[in-house]
Length: 223
Image 1 (spheres, one colour):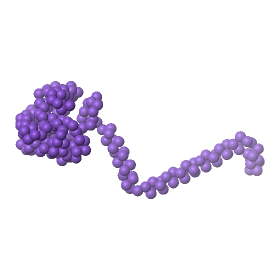
Image 2 (cartoon, helix red, strand yellow):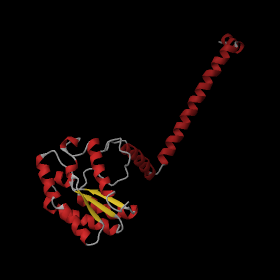
Image 3 (cartoon, helix red, strand yellow):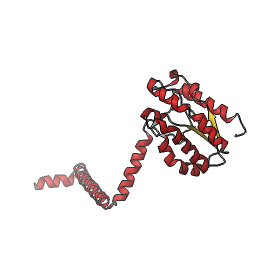
Image 4 (cartoon, one colour):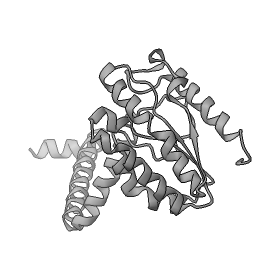
């Protein structure tokens, strides 16, 4: 044993190996202590902070979810919400309009009422109330209201046509009271061949809708 120790002291290479082992053990212990301190700090993080971090991660995941629009459409500033009916939009619209202070409003609504078969006899009255709330929140804005596009399913299309028949009259009533409301015929702008899933337009269908909106916007002194 004594001879081995002397040889270790005499051999600088073996001394380096031994020193390297000591340094690695020291580094390992330092990492362990650092990890322990981080765990201790993590235990002291308030639950609200942890919840906020989880909320940020959830929002990032939501941003990665697919949405019902072609990716080539550039303008995503709208209040189109997947599956929302007239009454659900109406419950939020006053705050949205007051915050945005829009010059023009494009309103194509009622498809989800049709698909969900939500009290279709009462749908025209719900649309009228929504127009009232939009024009009251932004009295100087021009509101362009369209009937809804064609639907592939015959039962849904029958409901849509019954609803669409009431839309021009509702718009005319509010326009007769001095509200800046205009009707835009949209149902015949598309065919079922322009639908991606029987309900939502494909890229060609969205282009056809955009052309109708553009024609209405440029037909008067509104822009």
